[in-house]
Amino acid sequence: MQPLQLPACELKIVQDNGQTRVYDFLRRRFLLLTPEEWVRQHFTHWLTEHKHYPASLLANEITIRVGGVSRRCDSVLYHREGATPQMIIEYKAPHVPITQAVFQQIYSYNSVLRADYLVVSNGLQHYCCHVDYTTRQVRYLPAIPDYEDL
Image (cartoon, rainbow, N blue to C red; front, side):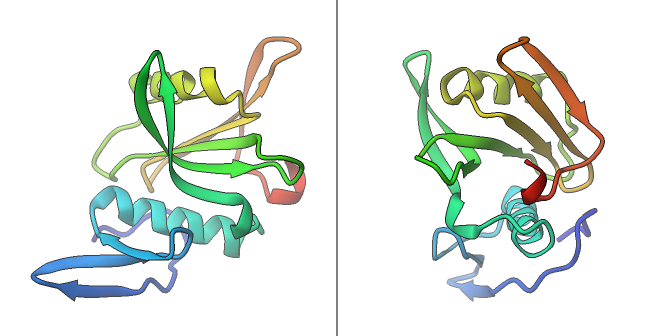
């Protein structure tokens, strides 16, 4: 798999009937290793190991309904108080450019979840914005914040 703009991490990778699988430590199971999953696993490891996000508050592949259609958020970080989303993270494979369409996708998810932070990454580029619901403004941040700075 392609090197990413994220720190290296130890992933559990196995071969199973000719397929390469990676262990998702949040879902506690092996999944098919796709380029997008490669990004997700590196990113979630980076968040927990380097940015100090509690793994207990992160979840992968969360199903929501947007406009009556079932969709899946790649990762969601929940607030400590209650089960409300604090951050939504959308991953793309490294060869997929981060375009306005990707931001529209995560904004549509946020129309339902109303998270404070939105993150988009293809493993090579990472974008984070903070949504202020009082002023109705979106502010792009220079970097993904540490957990304690959220």
